[in-house]
Amino acid sequence: MKKKKYVNSGTVTLLSFAVESECTFLDYIKGGTQINFTVAIDFTASNGNPSQSTSLHYMSPYQLNAYALALTAVGEIIQHYDSDKMFPALGFGAKLPPDGRVSHEFPLNGNQENPSCCGIDGILEAYHRSLRTVQLYGPTNFAPVVTHVARNAAAVQDGSQYSVLLIITDGVISDMAQTKEAIVNAAKLPMSIIIVGVGQAEFDAMVELDGDDVRISSRGKLAERDIVQFVPFRDYVDRTGNHVLSMARLARDVLAEIPDQLVSYMKAQGIRPRPPPAAPTHSPTQSPARTPPASPLHTHI
Image (cartoon, rainbow, N blue to C red; front, side, top):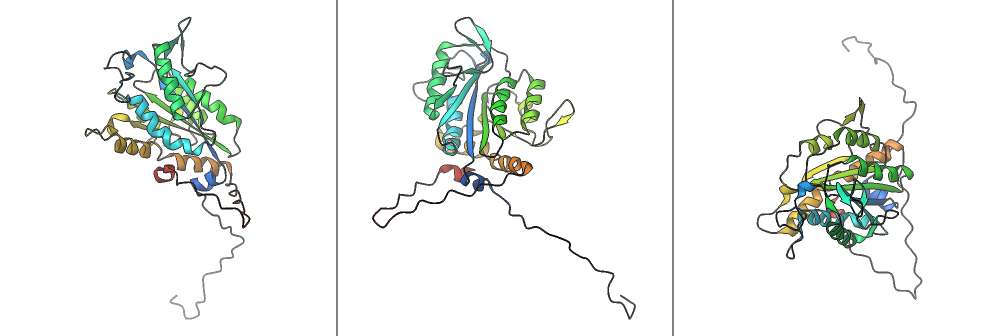
């Protein structure tokens, strides 16, 4: 620039460019993506005898136990994203009648062919029925239920469905290596995993599975996405007894990562949201349909 005849240092020629719009979680929901919600409940003996008030599975006539509270808090929000309201519900770590075999993915409703329950109330009913029929045992294995949901998620990968597995557990995981491998394999599928830890146990392994600080890996293979969210239930127990407020906080934090996880899967697969269905037109003689109330999901997610 110190030279008197300076003009420029060359030219930049733009050969092509593209404008891309950033798609949001709600764009996919509006386009018809369904959330398939599955629950897996820990029936290991470390929970304590369900007939005693010290048990995490104790059914008090006055209030819900930690398992039922966590399930209700998360389920009542996420159910709005699933049109048929039929939710598979599984248990793990129990001895089943009549032969006492140990299972790590048994249907709470007793139907091996179809473990789905109708709504959150249906899951709670099946959960309470299972407590009366199975024997709490062990160990605490996650891999079978993760693989169970991953199998279903692998069947539909066109963006029309996304699976969310809620695992509620009290203790130290027994099959860490197998669970890590199952999660790494599931990370490339349309799937997320929520783990709610109940009770006072140390949950170091769950924090490791969460993968917020260090991405989870198995056999030298890194997970393609972070798909696990862990929260300890004890952090949300309101000492004033205000369960409504504390469970709202639990649901908010538990579901906080789901939108980004869903969008990250869709972007990785190059799946764009489908256009929202056209609103029905009404003739002058017809009264327009009432607009349904806003779902609490949009508030939390």
